Length: 273
Length: 349
View 1 (cartoon, one colour):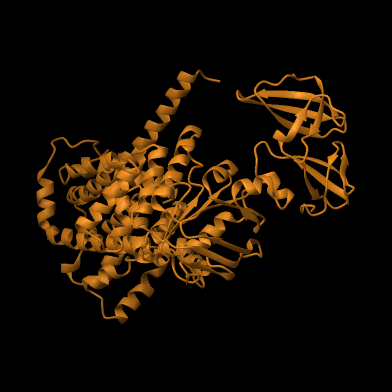
View 2 (cartoon, each protein chain N blue to C red; view 1 turned 135 degrees about the vertical axis):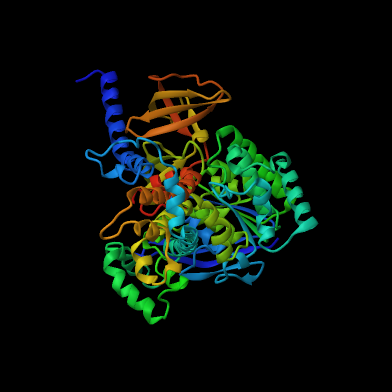
């Protein structure tokens, strides 16, 4: 058995190694974003740019209408976050607290949808949205991610963990079922709601496939689609793509840092994703 | 304030478990009734049925002569204080107390006046801007009480409200609750498993077991004149001593013998309170050995074992004159024995 100190050092080394594995792609992205267009193709590829080229950022972000793409991504993200937080809170509360016919089988169906890979839903979703005449519209873009089964699951579990006495006390205090939900249950579920909101934001912000499929006009493109478009079949401008990717990452970082505390609490609770 | 009447109340849970079995109970206007019984006897279920948090299988609940059996909690005009206080942790004490008024759309000066009055009555005026997490157990209890009294309900329901408090605060709060009851003249149904709480606070005690109401009455009457062995055992600490034997119509004969002017019964149980056992030599004293002496200051508890192996506990004033290992005589003080049928625990008359 190694000494406790040596064991701890070993543990730290393993943790640092793992952390580096996680952060390396981001550092690589940042490094590439600052390289010259042809520096990227040197063999072996350099780890750092010879001269950092900050102009890549302005060039990349003005080569395409990124302001528009950011706006579209923001609309998609805000709508997704709002939709998922509202539906997850309400459905989660109903599944946790209200007795109604078919509650258990219905919840099982919700859980079942978690097993279906998103890619398998792409065509049916498109056909549905097309039938509603929403292809190439903002409504069509945001429509499919307004409800998230995992969010409903997380909220249900969270509401189940709250003591019922507080809700009963509110009922006796004269609160209606809506007031019990809105004034007592929702404020108590803030950490879980923050987690749902954060995941919804990240999912919406990095969405690529659905926005590509549903948006025909360039006006409805999102940031990820913009980033991807630097990468053609015969040509790729790696530094520009990486510079745009770094810019696209900033809002996610800001939201994550702002919600970090609540998110970690929710993560520890949900124990998944 | 209003009276509270339960008639033939039955609550059967899914799976056929009977929580409350044909309970009929009346709490008079302004009366303080304690519902006592061991854990799981159905007393909290009764409270929840009165509050409207559970629906009865059959029977009725009336408050102030109005049938509220099928009304939702908010329309019953009752306030409840929960065992864990159930304060809303995201609201300040002021907002907690104001909540019942705010959801009824009361606002402004009237709301402030009522909140201040309730807080002053419970001496928590200085804590109004704190969150529940910043309060001690006793302070939370007071805040929960203030929230209950602020809207002047028809009756109050208490669900073991003192069980989370330490012994000293509990004793103090007990006295304060009694004083509060006198001051408000409130109708109170108080659930507890602590018979000391029930005996010291309530005007009427109702004893329950396995979903049924065994007996109700004034605390001392129930203590002195229990209708069954279960009631006799539940009230009193230490619990009543029991000795198996038979009654002849004139005497009880068993490991202890005494006068028993009750019906003859071949399979009877003598119940005798610890304070009714007399230690010392006497003609009819049964020989026993002292196993433990517990001095409590003003009195001592003497634990004894009869030759037949039955264990007894006697309460003697001041210091006991014996110590562990001593052989002593023990008898039942004249006229204090209670006699029950062994088969069903009912009292022999």
